Length: 169
Image (cartoon, rainbow, N blue to C red; front, side, top):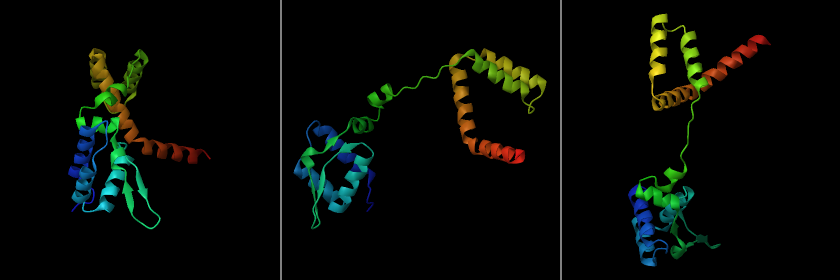
């Protein structure tokens, strides 16, 4: 049995989703404890889901050992609701990032293409011509791809800078 069973974790979130804004009942909580194979695994999963911000719960640990789960205080969070609904929810709407392109961005891309030694003059002219014809969304997509590629090569850039600096000293 997998200690962190994704199916049972999803079922806990669904039970909390259905019970919202109330907590779950003792019977439902006990059934999840059984499905996880005991209190220890159940608590580990509750803490895991809480750690990801999908639910809130109160678990008291006693000095002599043992735990008490305040099942009636357990609640699904807004992030948990978005996860269960699998539609991004308000989080997707509220966390939109806008990318604005200015004419200097296109000019810089053209300059990079022109100074490249990896293409013939004919290929460079064709790329610049194509770049100028691209719609705004395509240019945004191209810039994001170039940014991703640049970030992926960042360690190489740091190494080149370090090498150059050591050569100057």
